[in-house]
Length: 180
Image (cartoon, rainbow, N blue to C red; front, side, top):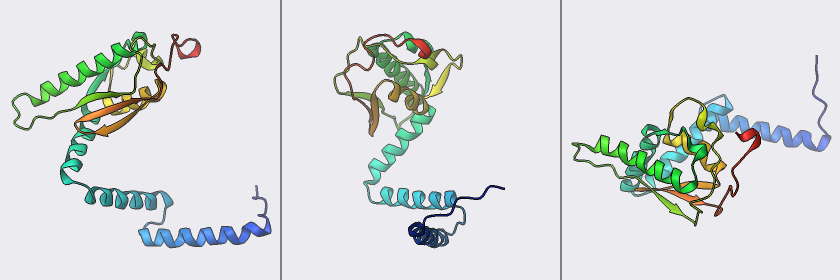
């Protein structure tokens, strides 16, 4: 049987205080498990943020977040595209999806990419997963993979989704080795 090593004397009191605070926090949340308590806190924070902001903006963000989970992005071949080419492909795929869902609707959804920074359109792309054979992925999860690999951050500013490029060129040479 393994036993945790004893805490140094100065940490015993600190640990007891933290455990007491955590117990009070779990009781206030109405949840015994810390993960469930975290969910209560995050949910309350989210409700507070939503209630403190313009309802029109909140609605636009809700629509944008919904679109991120619905718009399918076919990413096969992206590893062979340069920055300007994959930006054009994403714009085309987003536009095609929106045209389809807006057809015959009186409430048109507007959503497009706005590029911030000065990315080099001829820069190579890191997208080793583009040949995984899965075909497509919703835009949100796709950007989760793709943005950090290619040095841009995503920001929501309805009706735009902003791609803020941190570097002019994340990949001046084609990525090689284990990436491909």
